[in-house]
Length: 120
Image (cartoon, rainbow, N blue to C red):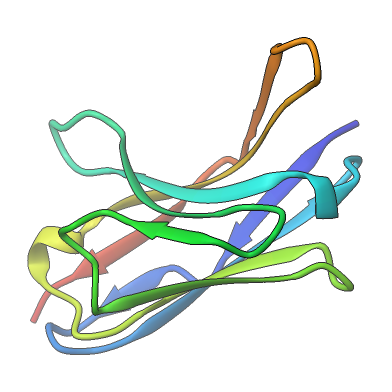
């Protein structure tokens, strides 16, 4: 059974920082690309950041320079460090594990999400 369990969300003031964690189980973590997505109130889910199995990273323009995604394969955990948080960062943040096999078949797993609220 695959589980992705996010933690680290909460209420933070504008300009503050948070570190989100996502602990994975039931998958061979090191072969999966991992990502963070978010869904704000009344908005569609959007990509925040991804990290490949090889450690290459990609960020949405809206968080570039303010966020860092990293992974610890020994702990089966992916992190998202977010700094200089803005009210528009308020959203439910979801962890994703994705992989495309040799036949081109895509598999995705999602966590339940963790709420991040940026407000004074």
